Every structure is written in structure tokens, then in C-alpha cells.
Image 1 (cartoon, rainbow, N blue to C red):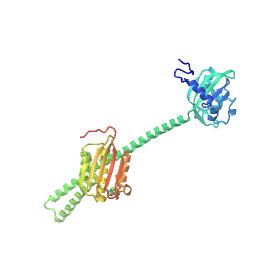
Image 2: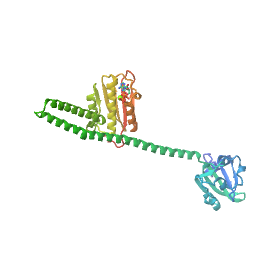
Image 3: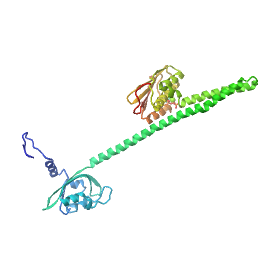
Image 4: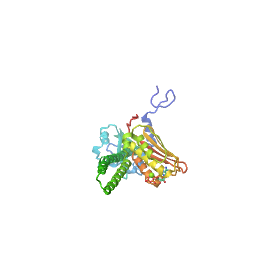
Length: 367
Ligand SMILES: Nc1ncnc2c1ncn2[C@@H]1O[C@H](COP(=O)(O)OP(=O)(O)OP(=O)(O)O)[C@@H](O)[C@H]1O
Ligand SMILES: [Mg+2]
């Protein structure tokens, strides 16, 4: 068995960590700092002079070590030698290793270092030899990592709060529709019934009969308008029969044939509402601008998304920036961390594609 540093059977020299360190110190790669028994700087190599921002070792030799390079904490508060573990270890003649410390450069800035101190004879008295390593790069990388973590967490909060805002707005829509239904609409239905009753009387003068008949027509028209309004705010069929039912209702009112390829799978409210609003706006646009002969609304489900597409075979050339409909949908999708893509080459029809993220834990089953 070969001794340390001796050529072994495989003719390779074995190096200990100490040998390597010594080689680096000698070659000047590792900053070296020798302090005598009075804590005076006895020797510094070029690497140490450079790291601490001095021009030459003359500026350091003979000066008190702690008070020259270790006199303040990173927060700027004083660091008395009495509090310094290096000073105490030196006095006791013990080695010490510190993984993260801050030394003060000539210009007062701080440099993060790790330091290794051993007791040794210097100028025929016991002193301390210190080697240290510049940790600037790893401290910067750590700071950057921490900054990114904070940023990621903040971004997560912003995303969650935007999704909550969308969900709160949807809830308000649903409540408003219920209030319209239970309040104004049922009140008007009551009026219709009373007016119908009034018309049943035999002794109603003709002039009054005409007036009541008109009032009846106006009230019925008001109910229809109210229904339309409520439907635009939030179609109750969406809550009751899900996306497929609501898109069928849209297709039933469309002026062109609409093929529907949607399963009866149910999704969280915000997902169904978003998909519905995309389908409604895209089909309205088809009717208004596309001059298409047919349209198709389809959904597919991936691991994390519900993907809804609305295709038409019309003239193409849709520009989301030209109006507020498609841009508003894009904003809504962005708030849920989804995307809206419009593909619409002139002459090649239009596809509106929405990728709607499914909240974690959305069940995969069908009703
Ligand atoms: N399917 C389509 N085929 C052809 N052109 C379309 C189609 N959809 C939209 N466009 C064009 O893109 C423009 C932008 O549509 P968008 O829905 O954003 O706004 P808008 O319909 O004009 O206004 P709003 O939706 O606010 O009533 C439309 O003005 C229209 O010119
Ligand atoms: Mg539009």
C-alpha cells in the first residue's frame, strides 16, 4: 500500500485535500492570510490582497487583522474582536471553519467568504494561518434563487386572485339572474295574469279593452326582453344542463347550421361559464361577419385543460384587436391562466380556440 503522495501500484499519485490546498496556496489561487500572536497581519498573498481590494500587501502588513477586515457586520453594526469566534479560536490555539462570513474590503464594501483557520508557528510564536474562499457568486445565485421564489409565490397569488375575481363576477351574474327571475320577471307575470283577468269581464268598455290588450302585449314583450337580458347575463340552462345544453340553445337560435361535438361532462362553474361565453361570442361573430355556410363547436379534454373550438367555413380575416368581444374573452382566459387563439386567414374560415385550465382535482368522470 503506497503512502500519501507516493506512487502506488497503478502508478498514480494520490493527493490528499491538504496537498491540493497547499498547491493552490503556493500558486496563489487561494487567498492566504497569516496573523501573529498579537492578531497582527504577518503575511498576505496576492489572491488575498486582490480579493480585499488593496493595491499591495504593504497596506496590510503589521495592521491588526480583525480591526482591518472584520470590524463590522453586514448590517453595518460594529463587530468587536471580543465577539469574533476566530479571535477566540486563535487564542485557544484551535482550528475553526466558518462556512459564511463577511470581510470588509479596503473601500468598506463587504465580501462573503468561507474561512478555514489553523494554529501554526509564525515568526517563532504561535499564530494563525487562514485560507478563505470568495462566495460572491454563490451568494448572488442564492439571492437570485430567493428572489425568483418570492416572485413565483407573488405570481401565484396574483393568478389565484384574478381567478377569484372572475369566479366572484360569475357568481354575481348568477345571483342577478336569479333576482331578475324571482323579482321583476315574476312580478310581470303576475301583471299579465291580472290583465288577462281584467279582459275576461263582460262589461269592459271597448276603449278600455283595447288599452288593456296593449298593456298585455307590452308586458309580455317586457318579459321576453327580461328573459333575453337574463340569458345574456348567465343562461340558466348552463347551470341546469351544462355546457352541451347551453351550446345547443345557442345553436337553436343561430341563423346557420351548427354541429355540436360536446359531451355531457360537467365542469366547475367558472370553466363552464368561460367556455359558454367563448362559444356565444364566436357564434355571434360567425352570424355577424363570417358569411359561413356552417359552424362547429367542439370540446376536448386534456389532462389540465378543457379545450373548446368554434370553427366556421366563412370569409376569415377576424381581428381580435378590432373589437372588444374577442379581446374581452382573451382577458377572461388570461385571468384563469388560459389562452385564446384566433386563426383566421382571409378566405379560409375562422377558428377560435380556448384552452381553459381545469382547477386541480376536477373529476374526470361524466354525469
Ligand atoms: N368568424 C369571423 N369571421 C370573419 N370575421 C370575423 C369573425 N369573427 C370576428 N371577425 C372580425 O373580427 C373583428 C373583431 O371581432 P370582435 O368580436 O372582437 O369584435 P366585434 O364583434 O366587432 O365587437 P363586439 O364583439 O364587441 O360586439 C370583427 O369586427 C370582425 O371584423
Ligand atoms: Mg364580437
